[in-house]
Length: 253
Image (cartoon, rainbow, N blue to C red; front, top):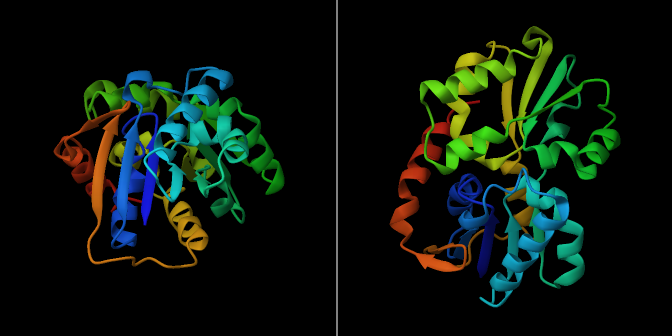
């Protein structure tokens, strides 16, 4: 079993990190389009073109499934991807459904492209959360993550300033609608009131992967991993610091 995990950059490593724990005996290929990151400030057409090009490359690697571990790419291109390729393609979307029974507001933080996209608006409408959901674009967090700047004074000030635009006492859930944002869970937790829960779409995506694989999680004895940065294969040791950071952040909710 060979599974490709794709993201505009290093954000999707948060999904890969959990997939490596959930599946056994899988050949994983991680593709980060670092040369073209960030996607979140690009047009839908540009994001779609970049995503399809990446998917074509991954198909040529004979993968059995592609996971779009990027909310922005999923929002812009998932329909075109599924129309263009016959293999299973799993996308990510903000986990708003987890707040369906919330008595307070739900604050979704994501890239501008995800915030403006019809896919997110359709999701909010389907789960009947129009009156409860607040949306906040935070494009600088993607840049901070790509530069491996996770807890500087500038990062914390940016998060604090953006969150101050909302009444957090009336908020029950903060939904991380971009996989890059998982690197900053500690700063979000520090700045949010204790009653606000932080949620993301990783567990739901892992479950969808298993569903499409017939609820099979073990295919052999050991996982293998190859890492590509914009079509160039790289040493997987380069991503180890990110995976370590994500392990620390996975304990925060």
